[in-house]
Amino acid sequence: MQKILTGLLLIMASTLAQANVKCPDAKVQMLYPTEEKTFIQLEGQNWQVLGFVGDEDLPTKMAIAQRAKQQNQPVELTFNNGHDRECLSRDDTSAVIKIKARKEKKNQD
Image (cartoon, rainbow, N blue to C red; front, side, top):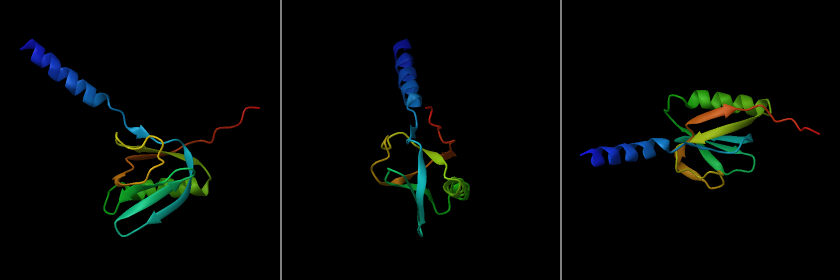
């Protein structure tokens, strides 16, 4: 019985340990809303789904992306585990779960 419980705990712990995928920081190139979803493209990355129409948090994510674009700030996109870690491939099925504006790194010469 104890072996079964230990096994179940290990399985649950490994499932919880799977981290979300954070794409490399990059500046917003374009936002493209369609009837079903809104796409975002960051410099050097492929188009990603920012959110689907009807998502409660889509207006907030749009506002963050638009403000970052206007201020020429990079953003960090976070996706559920399983997404392309470099964000080079296009994925029309999984939406951004978090967008975060980042401060631009200064060159240290």
